[in-house]
Length: 122
Image (cartoon, rainbow, N blue to C red; front, side):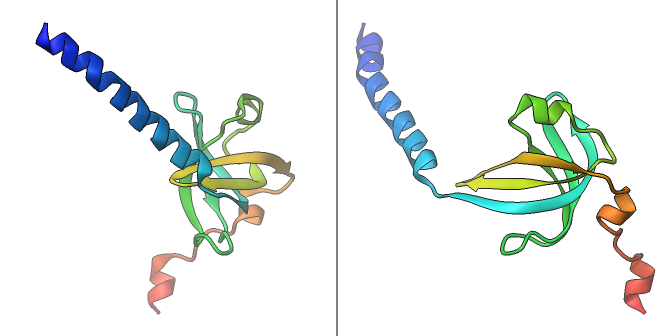
């Protein structure tokens, strides 16, 4: 009996904490960055695209990284090897891709591969 009373008393506190956490996320500023890169692979399970991208000015250097794609139609239109440009959205700790446009470029034209490490050491 005491355990059920405790649970009833704690439930509103737990719900309030969850709501506050959600408010904090939605009140974080929404930042948008243009992204240009090549689709390396796709994960149907979690709807992410791994993209080898150029530098994202003011945000990150060129690298290969996975990003969620929230729009099912945009995700469905992607294929490995596609050269794309779009918007990287960042809000708090959340990152996702959107506004994706396909470019008629080969992967090598889209994002030149990094120089071999042996050449970098010379």
